[in-house]
Length: 407
Image 1 (cartoon, rainbow, N blue to C red):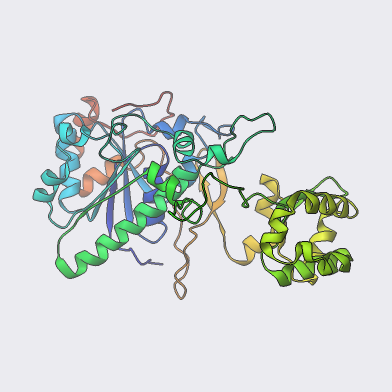
Image 2 (image 1 turned 90 degrees about the horizontal axis):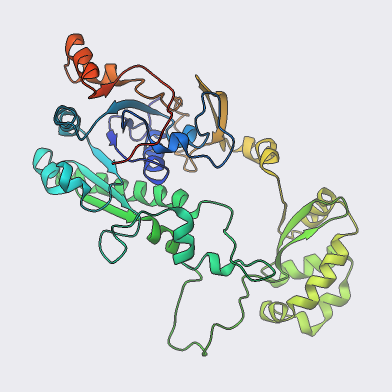
């Protein structure tokens, strides 16, 4: 079934996680996304945060590049540039994450491509932003967690900062850039002209803290207490050794918690009457709640708390997440069949357009899997395609990636 972006062609020249994630969100809604990667493959194929899948590739590559067609192309080679420019001449969107200056050196800067295709939406994701002292430096998610203050908010008992455990910038920046692309396409429908759209991983990490990263002139000196970490927003160990997460924000939820615990005395105690009172009494409340939750198993507590309309959730391990019934009930997971990994289950697009059916999900491409078909669409004859492959301009045959590329 066609999606909202059916008929939109996207040329995705980005690598690693954040840029390809943008293309994933566009493909999820029907865009024809062509993944352009070097002859040695996108570095994300061999960047591992978990054990590799069959064929030695990273499992992170599977979701971030689903729904795309794969073109292995040396975009630095003069004939490779001709091929890419031929694709861009009729494309709707270009996505890339070159460092500042690289696009200009290769001839893929916005003014040059705007002259080639005035309707092109030029989407550029950088590490630190296009200007400033860090603009030319390489950047990775954990660096942005450090620079944005995220790491400083989580510390081990002996003081060292701790990463959040999720890739905050890498996973949020694609949503922001896809949002910007949608805005530019909407504007183009009125004006007939494309626009350059940018975001950065640093800005994404900052944006994920928008409610908390606020500085005001009337605040008292010093940072003050951090009420984001308190007894009312905390995990608790239960009798069976599993944990539940408790989040009590409103006074009625507090009273519901007291009823669930059988502690009417806590509800009547003026020391815990309001949210700020409970935040200030966090140490005392934490000790009370730790003792109480140790008296029953996790799932029993989750059921009892739900009966009293108290927000809580089981703390699930990674494999438990896939089996959690709420996900299946809302189609939050999607499956593909990959030639190397076999059946792969992954998170579906978090945005649903109701009234339209699901779009068939193409598995992430093998290296060079669709090169020949794409070149044929551009009018290249079989003999020319063979010559280009022999000259090291393209790669047609799917092959295992054994090293990371660099531009």
